[in-house]
Image 1 (tube, helix red, strand yellow):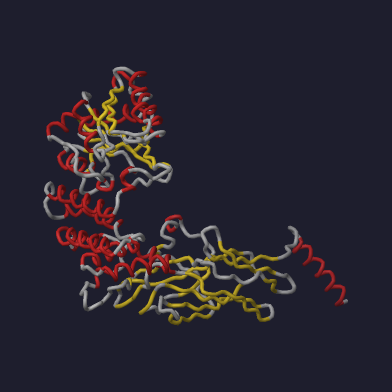
Image 2: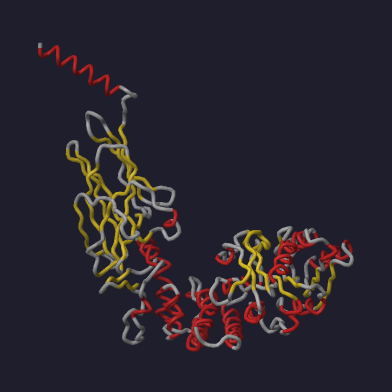
Length: 533
């Protein structure tokens, strides 16, 4: 454990270690105090005094990062396995016992125990869907879980002389972990127990959060260069580097990028360009989502001003409109079909699972109103969809069923082939949005006097598939509830549900009690007979 100014989190971490179910007779805690200036050093000494022979403490001058103290701890460790823990994080009580048992059972060189984030810390979860005795770095989510918070067989570490690069203030665990996973005879995943709780400090003082753009860029370049020396060019290297292009490098061109000074923006783009020229293959590019690969490509071409515009426009307006053309869909980011850049259309093409998210992000209500003619009621809707070009198959319909849970995350879904869509009724049309950000679908839909809760949905044919997109109200004023019909009055209302999606509800204002309809018919029948006598 490398320790630097992590009080009061350090106490919880140490308590989680000394209370491990594996037992103190099988446990050695090597803590290296890397020149802490708070009470961390004293807290370590307190635990060492309380647990002699279990907690070993080394004090040293500050080295600037966790690599040097981690290497120092490796020199001292004597156990069959080593496990690295952040001194502001903590372990589940049975973590070490379960991982050691799992490693012994499967002959694992590396065991990845399930990790979760706390206090808002993000931890990628795709790797932890199930236990897996043998996983590959190249066809699993392992590249997105490269922290050193894993169980390593110590003789394996020493055999390959694995150590942390001490010239990297950020990300020094990745070269160690990547090389271990490349060289390991077996990497195992233990997913049925939460072994590790990664904590985001309340003051966001973790070193990863404090590093600036250029420091993170330099460390990412060093990680990728190290990995390139271990993995030959091709699909295997692409599988690992997808993580670095979609995670570390993409984070350098997020919403905070435009606020950097011009020189730093230029330097960040130049660094990304160097890495993209070396490693951003066509296959890797095509495996990424459109937004990230466009930003990487703009940085690679040195189109810094266009990159800033793309980031600012998306932050303010959402994803740009989608162009439908010849059965394909493209997002019209800055740089699309710019002859000066010569970027391929394929870079901007939307495919697969990203389509419903892109559609859902840009679909919203423009206006809604009631139209009443006597006892007939209709709703008049104008709905913006982020689509231009071949939009002839875009419609607005009322759906009586909730969206499936699979649609919750992106907000929309691709409709399975053969699925019956809600009936298309009323009048439909469309026009170009005045601001050029897509198409406005116009619909006048008659409503029936019945008890119903109807979701307003847009249905669009994009690149050979039909997509169902709920319509978000986005703060647009909704028409007031209205009463309609006279003999049996109904109430109609338009509201936004908990997810901000437009819902139209119809219901009778008064309903006869059970059996009243039958009694009423009998009374009317008797009255009719009397009148005809």
